[in-house]
Amino acid sequence: MNCKICDLYNLDETIAKKLLEKYTYPWEVLPNIEKFIIEFGKSLDENKYEQKEENVWIAKSAKVAPTAYIAGPAIIGENAEIRHCAFIRGKAIVGENVVVGNSTELKNVILFNNVQVPHYNYVGDSILGYKAHLGAGAITSNVKSDKKLVVIKDGSEQIETGLKKVGAMIGDEVEVGCGSVLNPGTVIGKNTNIYPLSSVRGVIPARSIYKNQNEIVEKK
Picture 1: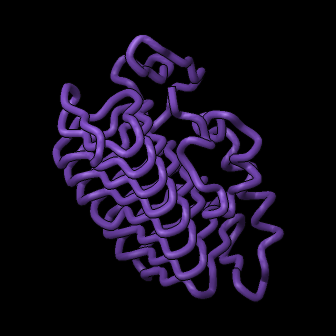
Picture 2: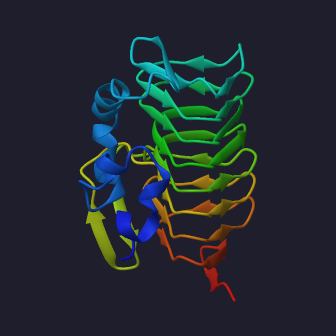
């Protein structure tokens, strides 16, 4: 099961490197994002970042639309773009050059540098790796319909997370097609493409093309 932090992410592409290095699996990080932001935010370079309100730090080079809502704790990285009516509900690390688009909602997330969630996306209790991109309307579902604890599944292999809320762990340079739903506990390996309108669950291998649950092919 290739779903360890070291399998999915280049940690040099996030200010949360020191947090992620403490853990083996990415979902183990989720309960600790809030505390990390509050502590790390105090150490940010005051020449580059401005504390807008309690536990909200925004890079001076970031572009934030006046209609965007940002609740703390949150860090908005350098040259990030927070567009019209973006809704950041807190516990959010938004990396450098990230685009958070119109009506996109974030909650308890780490977005690595150069991530794009530009059109009507919901990203909750999730980690998106370097240059990951969600197509319009793609969402991370983070709670099971039966409200049971989320289990990471890869065929017959299973890992208990012990958490009720786990969205998607998306590796570096993953492309998720428009209108797709990533079910709770989905893990997508690096450089993988997800077809539009997909319903994805379980662990998807790196460098693959996901056409549907029964047709996942290796990239050539």
